[in-house]
Length: 208
Ligand SMILES: [Zn+2]
Image (cartoon, rainbow, N blue to C red):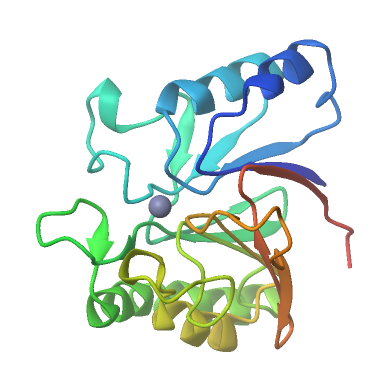
């Protein structure tokens, strides 16, 4: 399975690449947040592939009107679903850094959200012999690809979730690279490869 993951910035050249057939071998599109929903809708429409996404801290609160969801996509926030035999989970939002911020959570609130995934993770383990294959979030885990500023501090709940669920991949966004891409964007944490998707990446996922 080949995945196109996108995050945080609508990249102009992706429109040309998509319409020129550059992503024709993509099976699935994953959005890691802070993107205009029109961008996600464009990708799923042009590539004719399923889209799953989580909201970022700059996205509107989830709702049913057209401005607060990506048409044709599935919001994976606090959900676990199985597609093409692959187990996906999502957790949107970032750490709280503004009292009125949308899709922002304290470390404790995010723990509570992550814990809601536990029953489905356990069920997956019983049914499929593993809890999770791919975790998509907006924020990075604590201490991995994050930084010291309040808005970009990683979420401790994700370190916990990765340890419990042991996904093969964790894709996230939220933290951009300011130092000419010298910063690391891929880190192995336990059995999981943590990847910063900003602004987009293609990932070939081999069957085990
Ligand atoms: Zn963000």
